[in-house]
Length: 554
Image 1 (cartoon, rainbow, N blue to C red):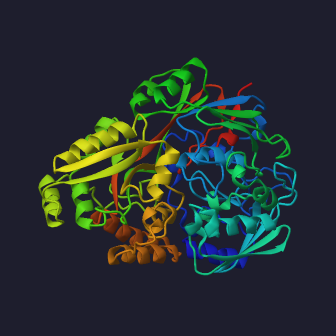
Image 2: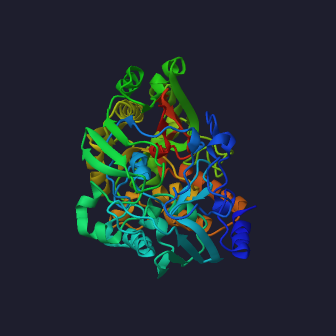
Image 3: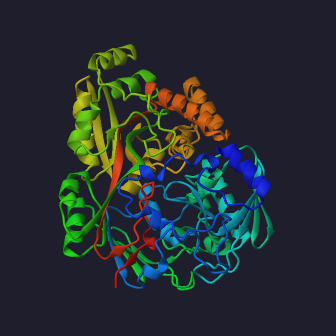
């Protein structure tokens, strides 16, 4: 069943929950999740096909093994490489922020491990027509401050993302939401101004993390540091460069979440993270490519490896010279040896990228080849662009154990065609702000990908996308090549049929690579190691962790 048929069946059946085939989200099959382990068991307590939960206070669409087999209590010790960029879903921008946000916030609906759509705060919904969706919010749910979750908060959340003063990085994802109508405390109707096939996936990400209107407005900028939400865990404290401490929201649901607390320690060095796991000082760590062979041979840990939507790229601001010239971008792209980068920096883990969509998605373009290394062609392109005698520019990076050597390898490879690239190392907060403020033409990024290809493609490559910094340059007007890609991106968003959408995404990715609107290196694989006492881990296709689903053996 394609997305169009799913919408039709929901309209006829009334209040039928959107399942995995719907809204263009069926592309990642369970079989594609390498190392899922007990994925069949993990689905045993998800909501029923009607999308209803068990009444007020029930946990919203928690994908976990049978709760009767799980122990209550304990503190989960997590080691991550960096702080979140923020804890406000509207203004935070890092892919790693989701590791925190999903345990703090409830979504209106949830994206499942295979990108199927699951109930969240909304336990029922009805697709009235192509442009109208009625959501029924579970009665009795409360925010961390005790105030009720209402349809007014749903409306406020969407309006806040769309408000230019918020400067939400996700505003473009909900631009097709014309308005949210509040019918009563538990009913909200979304009125769309155009067909939006990925709307449910969008609401399963930052845009659907519901924020309390009164508390968010009252807290102002402080909301970014210690937000009030309705998720299974509350924020106790955030000490920058040190830790984030979360505690169980006791009023969330009976016997859920299982954990009493989550203690996330910021440990920049991945080898130290892995050492902490082996000594018992951490329960959950991301395994860096250089440590994976060791992890595979280590007893008494659980190792999960799987394909995700993540990729590595240079984010290009086409509003800043000299990258405005497509020939310069193409020259830079053709002068890189991507296989050498994969082998040296990522220890051969992953694949050379052929576009921004990975094999984890149904929109992967299996016929598109990676850009080959061709130094002669690169020099000819630079000469045609007027830079035959050389070219110099700066690239901003977040300095860490992977990006720093990667940027140094790029610098050496580009030097072979007369390009002098200066590496500007910044903190994550500084790099994002300075790149947005048009100080640099290029930003080395690791993008985690999203549940629907629209969310990856639009945000990074549409002229109004949240991560396309050219849009923040008031003097910049997109050229005909960019506008042509915009039109295709918008068309793919407005089609239900998955085959038709894929054909468009194949064209879009081909154009992005040929015209070098981004310089892509690798499609990354995810690997997480857990202590033997952790239960309930489920790999998600987006590579994000759901710490709130875990428990600890007694």
